[in-house]
Amino acid sequence: MTKLSVALATHNEEDNLERSLNSVKSIVSEIVIVDGESQDKTVEIARRYGAKVIIRENPVMFHINKQKAIDEATGEWILQMDADEFLSDDLRDEIEKVIDMSGEEISKYQESIPDLFKKHQKVLEKRDGLIGEEDGLYVAFFVPRANYFMGRFLRYGGVYPDGVIRLFKKGKAYLPCIDVHEQYVVEGRVGWLRNDLFHWDSPTFSKYISRNNRYTSFIASQYKEEKLGRNPIKALEYILIKPLHWFLLTYFRHKGFKDSWQGFVFSFFSSLRFPISYMKYLTG
Image (cartoon, rainbow, N blue to C red; front, side, top):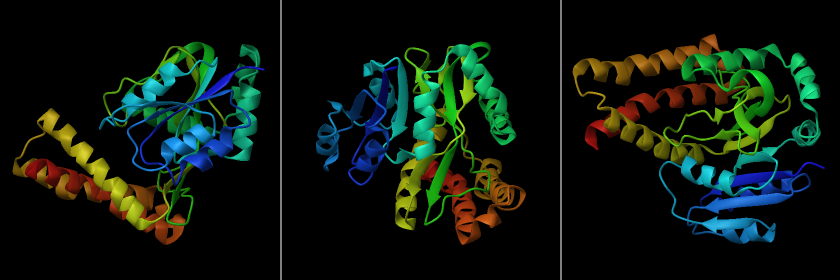
């Protein structure tokens, strides 16, 4: 059986970590966790599951600790997860099956990937450039991620499938650790798995606001590095035009209204990240 490692970076994740590890413990040979000096029971929970735990500082660019966990993993395949993510039963079975497939079997398996997933990848590549290589062996996989938002897994508003690379061969993918939205650099071809990774993103509004506050602060720091500008035209763009465009795009064009009231709240408050980040940039 092919050895599979799971790699996580954590910081004060006692409310999420056990659920995440329970979902993978039956298929992994190794658990590697890089913890950013948690002040709660995160490390205690990790060690209870037999994890290899490395404690280091908690950098603002959290991908640094993710990459450290990946580097420390020894499996032939690596499953990289966030502590607030957990596998559906179907995804767990699919991963176990795929990592034991031959290259030819994986290529055949990719022939029936849903068109929605392929379209989503094209959107990502339009933004980020080609992800992986166009030919050769499949060495990494996107998984469709279902985001839990205030009592509902969102399916519209451009939120699903929210493809994220989570499974890859050791040494074939790494994070540049430059930007919060960066893609993995993949040395080989990237495919898709079919079944959902569940993301316990924002079960409550207060949790959402807390995460959003950290996120907008990070964006503001990027604006500062980019020397975005402090003129009236930029202010109009980030305070009015960008949030209005985002709300109309997600709520109407991408049918966020089909996700009930949660769809409206998500579209509205996610659009506010532009003016909030810009105001933090101006006052920071």
